[in-house]
Image 1 (tube, one colour):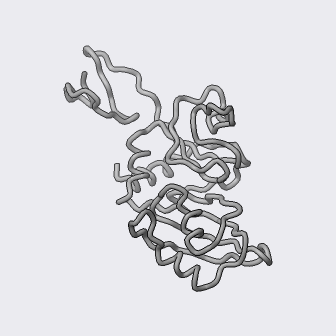
Image 2 (cartoon, rainbow, N blue to C red):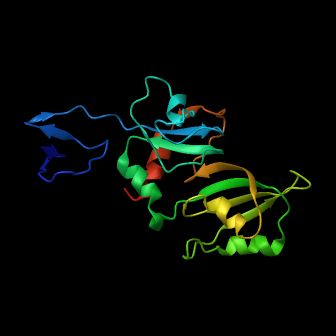
Image 3 (cartoon, rainbow, N blue to C red):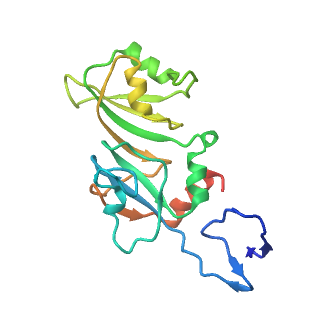
Length: 211
């Protein structure tokens, strides 16, 4: 087998959707690179199948959509921006911690948070015994009088990250939506809908991912 003209003998060699692959001198038709952004609704699972029969993000895609993988995941009740791609290297690069890819969320709390506690969140609350990066936080005004809305941008993704950093200061998240991932938004998309990223958007993502 040759990849981009070079002989490859190692099992498990990873290739990108843009690579040229030839077997016994015949070049295989490669899948066209495809990256989508979805406006994920609440109550939908980031999985291909669910033993409990809950709806999944793949059930929202048109039937003729080629095989795609989701870039990271959003919790069952978290809504908003979710990327899907058939470029493994792109997905891996965007999730690599050292690339500091920004993720912006808007969180509705069940109460009001003090300036001191919000500063603790901004400074980076340790999780699992490890320090975390600083967080850009903004208190959104004009929402609920008895419950704060907070916009926050993180440059790392840990399990239930937003929920856990607010829980650490005695707050609970009532609603959570991701409004941007690596600069990509779901503007103009209704819940459950997708759009194909433009060539320029994909190139920006590749640079961010370091590929």
